[in-house]
Length: 181
Image (cartoon, rainbow, N blue to C red; front, side, top):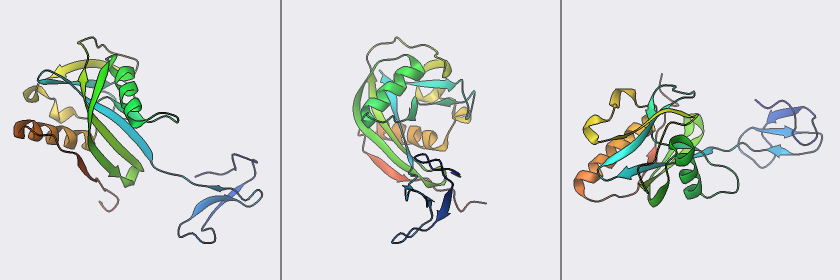
C-alpha cells in the first residue's frame, strides 16, 4: 500500500474518489489520484529448428525453475521490443519476432502476459545474471515438472498442440486464482 504522495510527499488516503467506482490512493493535499495498473510481461518462444530455448531462473521468484525468456515491459518500448530485450537479457540470444502467440490476463497478480513466437538468429546463447542455465529443448525433453509459472506451462502446451496441427493461432484468456482457496 502506498503511504505518501510521490509528487508532494504528503500522506495519501485509500478511498473511492468522486465519480469512480473503486478505491484509489489519493493525496488530499495536492489532489493527485495515484492509479495503479497491471504490469505487462513480454517474452518469446525462441525457436531453433524443432526446438525451443528455455532458461533456468537465477533470480526469484521461482529460482531454479525453467521458463521462457520474459519480463516486465519498460516505458518507451513496444511489446515486441520488450520481448526481444528480455530474450537477450535472459539468454544472450538474438531473436526475430514471428507473431504474437499468447495474451493472458492474470488478475490475481495484476499482470498481462504477451508471449511471441520468435526465430533465433543463431545458436549463440548462454547463461546470464538472470538465468543460471540456457538450453534448447525438444518437446519430449521439456522439464515439465520444473516449469516456473502456470502461464508458461499453458503456453508451451498450446504451442506443441498447434505445432502438431501445423497452424499457430493467437491464444487469449484469463488465469484467475482470486477465488481459489
